[in-house]
Image (cartoon, rainbow, N blue to C red; front, side):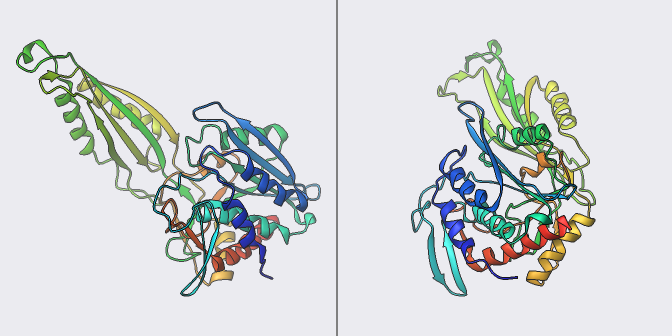
Length: 380
C-alpha cells in the first residue's frame, strides 16, 4: 500500500482550525472540503442551545453498490482548551525534527484530528464500488456530549443509514501505535449529594443542625464500599469523591447545607440506575439527598469477527498483536453501540489533553494504512 503524503497536511489543516468544545464552523468547513471531492454527500447541522450548545455535527456518506456492506468511521473535531505553557502556538501546526523522526505539535494532533485525517486518506484509496462508507463526526465529545453523537444517531436512523460496523478513532494505543484496541468501556455516573441542616451559632449547637458530620459519615461509608472485584473483561468498579463544599465564610456559624460530588466508573456487574438507587438508600440514612446524571452504561463488543479484523490490520502494519481492552474513560462508542458493533482504535495517547500535544508523522502514515485495511476488510 502506498503511503499518502497529505495525511500530514490534512492533520495540520484541522489543527489550525480552532475547535474548543462545543465546536462549530471552520473546522467542519475544513473536513467537508476534504470529503466532498471524494464523492461523499455531506450533511451538517447544529443542535442545542447555550451554554452546552450549539454543537455542530457532520454525517457524510458515500454510497456503494446496492446491497453492499456499510462501514463507518466515527470521531470528534472538538478539543479541550489548550491551557498555558505551550512551546509553540497550540492552534498552529508545528512540524519538528526530533530524535527518531518528525513530530507534529498542536492541540488535537492526537485527540483526534490526526485520526480523522488518516480516515480521510484511507478512504481516498478505496473505490466506491467496494461498499458504503460513512463518517460520523461530532463537535461535542469532549464536553457534555448532549448535542453531539446522540442527535447524529437520530439523523442516521431517520435516513436509514445504519452501519454494519463502526470504528471510533480515539487514541487507544499506549506505548506504541497498535498495542491496544478498545472493545468496550465501563459505565459512568456522577452524583451530587446535598445534606441539609439548620443554621445556628456555634455557641448554641442545640439550636442548630450541623449537616457536615452527617455528610462526612456518608462519604466514609461510600468510600468503604467494594462494588465488585472486576469481571471477565472489565477492571473493578470504583466510586470516587470528586468534590466537597460548604462555602461557610463565618467562623462562628454552623452552616445550613453541605454538598459533595461522586463519580462512579462501573463494569458490567452494574447498571447506572442500580448504583444510584444503592447510593440513595445509604444517603437516606444520613438524611442526604442525591441527584444523578448517567453518562453511559458499560458495554462490550465481545471478541469475534470485528476485533479479529481490526487486530489483523494492526498486526499487518505494525507486527504487534494488540491487547483487547476495556480500560480508560468514556467515549462516543457508548452511544454508537446502539447502532451496530463498535470498536475503538487510534494513535498513542501519551500527550492527549496535555501541553505540547504531538503526534509522530510516521504514526499518521501507518495509521492511514491500518484504517484502509480495516475498511476494506469490513466491506469485503
